[in-house]
Image (cartoon, rainbow, N blue to C red; front, side, top):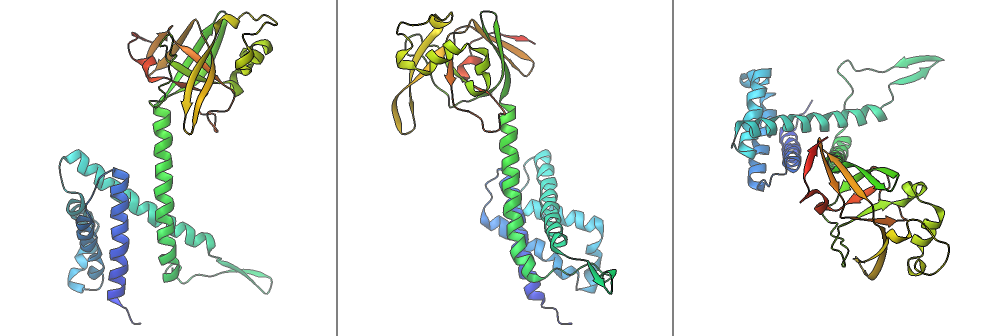
Amino acid sequence: MAVYLDVIWLLNFCFDYLLLALTGILLKKSVKKRRLATGALVASFYVLFLFVPSLTFMTQPLMKLLYSVLIVYLTFGFTRFRSFFQCWLLFYFVTFMIGGGMMGAHYFFQQDMTVVNGAIATKSTGFGDPVSWTFVLIGFPLVWFFSKKRVENLETTRIHFDQLASVTIRIDEVSISAKGLIDSGNQLQDPLSGCPVMILDMTVHEANFSPAFIKKAKNITEFQEEGEGERWEHRLRIVPFRAVGQDHQFLCAVKPDEVMISLEGRSFIIKKVLVGLSFHSISGEKDYTCILHPKMLTGHKATAS
């Protein structure tokens, strides 16, 4: 059997480069291409150890461990032991994640059983199923891209949940409980009172308000006209705002008695705030049902909850 060592080496060099690049992306590190190429070059030399009898000792688990430390050091450098150790572990995680994805995809499309003369027969070579070069060349980039996107989505979800707080809005005897997202991009304020404005998803919490109040809140330009009285009518406010690509928009808001925010074992009670009423869903997955103004967590004394 002819073995094209140069082709195998080149393939491993490209794969090692992508694995190190993905590790750098997940670490949020800006790694120079020269260092990535150096690390990938050293990592690709491992192929030679499998074909040179005098270097077979490098295939021992301890030598593999030390060799991976060298690869990570050449690629990402060393600043602190903790950060280096995390980088080294993440490199192994990425390698196993991509390798496991490749093998999982291979066996997903592989058919190991056939029916011969009415009997079920299994196929096996004794050394595992061979993976074709075409499958590797196409599958590896796809698994690499898929893994990168999944990790980024998980990270985004974690960031969102790190910014979620328990919110209780009290208006007279009514108490509304919601999960709030702390949005640093929300800078909406009432121009008259200077109160920060949080946004409440009315598609979820509409049942806490009377039909007459909802009718007045939806018809912003008409809610001050004479008609059926509503006990919370005096709490209604109109807040002008700007959206991307839109000017001169208006948001109907209500003045609560207080808003209590519970976050990381602390509680904040805010009285100077307006609750904007959104009749469109603000979260497709309903992970949160209100958006908090960042100023609601500053300038207020926190108490242990």
